[in-house]
Image (cartoon, rainbow, N blue to C red; front, side):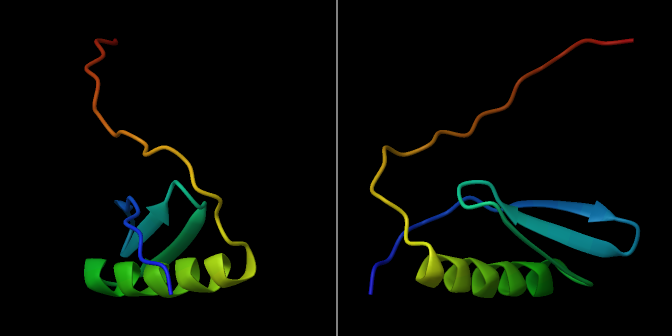
Length: 69
């Protein structure tokens, strides 16, 4: 069994937390952050069992500042 780290992006929509894995494209939701992450882990594991990833270079995540009106 392979072990790999993935990025999780979480945002809130009304009363639900949405968790997304940008490397794979999986998304899940929950009423708590922990529930959303647990669901995302399961969804991502199932996805990777069906569609294994090929080895690739790591992705880097950063932020940017933008001024707008």
